[in-house]
Image (cartoon, rainbow, N blue to C red; front, side, top):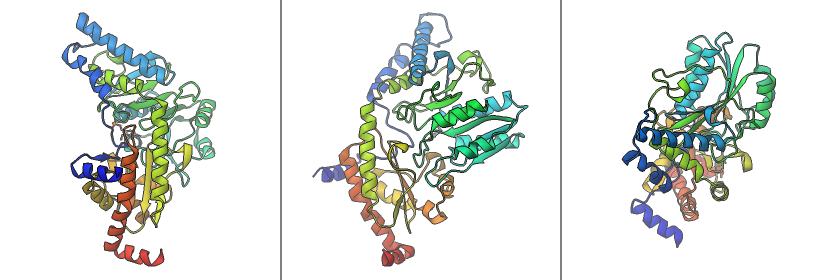
Length: 399
Ligand SMILES: Cc1ncc(COP(=O)(O)O)c(C=O)c1O
């Protein structure tokens, strides 16, 4: 009954949104918190009249909320335009400020905002080592230790992978980086508020965050920079953000970001984990299907990613869209790029398996009925597509 109603809603354009890894719906509490900073308290936080002072107060209060959420000091939080800028800032800022060293370590499964920044740094004379990962996307700590050289500046890793949900062990990596005296940067855009981040316990020097993956507005993020980190400013102009990031702060978006952080709670994580596991176990019943990334608590609570033999991920996304379900084949930033995902290749998938991938990502707003509808709809689509595919017809004979 419930699934039938969801199907009707889907036909009436109420999309079942399972693409929360790309972006999320702004929570109503967040929208509400932002409105006064458009309509009344629109002052520039750098001005000294009452409206400026009120904006500055809201800015500093938001900074405190975000700092507290990762056990940092408010002055260690710099607001940015989002995850891409935070990653660029962390990598380029530390590279150029420590340029006598010239070596950076990252992994093969980073978001494009890290990988392409690293490629650019290579063009500027820096040396970059890209660590491999195992079949579930975990780095090898020994490989990390071995790759650290005298001239290494930092290690940068994606905390929870945006495609396959793998959560790296920050405590263990942090110990190595501290012992070897290199900076430790994490891209926490997917993990923030879903996986604990404690900059002190985990020995973190730099943390990239953004708001739009956690029901906050787009175009706002933050970079945690541990006190005394040698980093150069990457955007020049006024003295905003402790002289590290020039430009009038987007106070309304920053207030919304802090609100999004404040309203997260552990019950959301519990619910997403249960629905994720239900989705995984049901989808794996479809013959010729594999789960990409780990199972259990080392997987991000909101992430699922599958490969279906003999069909293309884009075709599944198209048919799901027609059925009222928004999904993706992988990272939103790679969606227009038809090359197989670098993440899936790095975990050892063949070209064909990587092309047959589908990412379904949940949020606190995802309901059990919606997951049931997806579970009901997907096998039909896979079956239909395999009937069209010459490889699919062959597959039918062996399954
Ligand atoms: C892991 C990761 N890092 C960085 C980003 C980029 O963040 P933004 O869209 O805020 O620039 C994203 C968003 O797709 C992401 O998933």
